[in-house]
Image 1 (cartoon, helix red, strand yellow):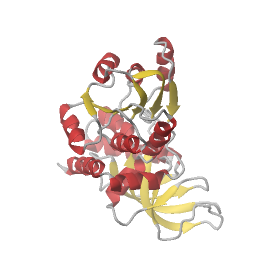
Image 2: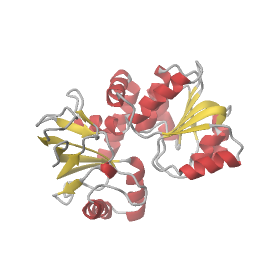
Image 3: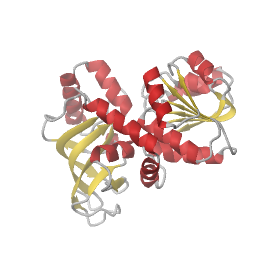
Image 4: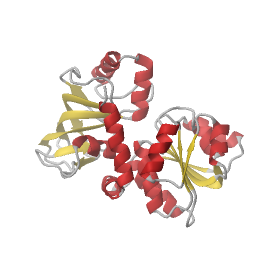
Length: 313
């Protein structure tokens, strides 16, 4: 360790959704996915998916704190890192033997290093670790959604692509709190639409393949002022552009986004839209997301439903 660093005993990784989907689609079986993740960490010294370029975050306990660390952590703190695993030196010691390979959350034993400019949050005591880690994993999305919607005109219409997922459901709740008018959630299946409707997070829930620009535009109808992209598959850039009104804003949170496709697509469609890259950090984002999660029962139900589905053999 350098004097400004922190050493973490790792208990669990949380792979980002785009990375886990890509690994699952490429490698197929859970055993092959487990070997792939272990191989990436062994080769790169961090969880940095070479295809998606993304990683995730981790949960662990502080073993040692450098004398010059500015993070405010103490030995024994149980923390979630709020900086990508692509930037976090990591060693896995158990070969991921306790991970089924079927979930984004990866129990493991190992060590990690946080730098002086890393970010971490002490785990709350009122939530299970798995839920807290899931919230922290996407906490940048609702915080930036809040900022963008508040900057827009009062009562702006907002669309969330992937409104049934973790970042999408929190973004819907955040947009509502920030004063959105018409609030639209787009999801890929009727079952997911039913869950979002039951959660009461949107005024309209529409079903379409976010990779089909015409289908997205037709499902949404009147273009919106703000579009939040929270999907975990590539190819959703042009649908977001078509669904957004001229002068509107698109926020891309998905690590599956092709930013060249977004920029060139907007140019090719003669769309006058502002496009923002969600970088995952907004000051106070962890506390903001936790507060939103606690205050919005529908969001918690979607998160817990996702956990139950993951735990089902």
